[in-house]
Length: 415
Image (cartoon, rainbow, N blue to C red; front, side, top):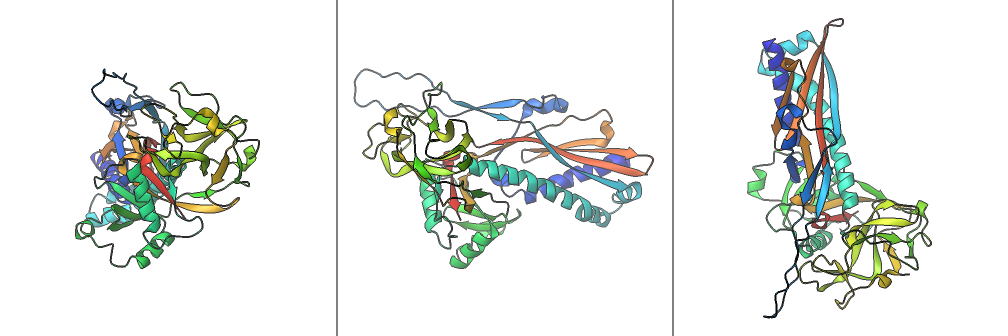
């Protein structure tokens, strides 16, 4: 019995170690552990976390009467309800012998645990990257032209700066190997940071330049544009306002068919400019939007459009306020060509995206069920015997959820 528990515990620890090394994207974002699931996993699957965004205010100028502002807290939710895992089987001799020496356990790790964890983390990261990229609306680069210098990277850095992403050493670039190969060749000698080289423990770590740590990751998501990328908003461009006064519905189905739109496409609206989040001064670039959902009449976009107040995020080119009528019959410009695929690399601050795991319950035969947490990731390994075939069956599970709570702190580098 003690040997069985020892094996399960060793496998759990080894699984977390390998997961830590191979989780390139997850390892660079905000990882949180939902302690409401503590105490033997008593949190219910499907539970949601409510995360508050910081309040925003408007400035009072001069010594006039106070302009006291109400607290206008915005909350977002993350559902922790996705359970993924991998399953293995061993004969009892293989597993029990693995505790007898480090070499035997190394073989177990190499032949079983590492391949299993690699498949698991690859699938989770792929889903997470795709969802995060679709939620990211800031986009730079020349569609169809892989970057080989810092021009596009510098533009992405500027986008993060304009959206007030912290300059605290927690910015990252995640790029596919083809892009990284071109960048490494074009930037010979720049990926040389001795402090980073000493700590290249995570898979894909390349180095640091342009205020970001660079990682190579071939799970990056590819956007395939719809069959039509030319058109305008309809005569009444904006749909009904949300409860907080913002607008996330745009009517553009008359000129661009529903079937021609794809979730994740990025576009701009003529005359609608981005602005500084605090001063509300107009930037020189149009505000970019990403499609998050497609309905029978309205297309849902992010960011939601806010025309006034502390959270105003769009203005006219001269900085004056936009009206709802300014969105009527306006030209739409999409990134890239129709029916064309573009790989999307990412530059982002750590807190742009959140990955949250929670405890799964320990079952009744707890001597064969172990749960461990490392770096905000909770993993459960559960073993059971098959007496007929003299086998030990093992399942490894993670309960998690993810979200893009601050997508403005990220930018696609289209390829």
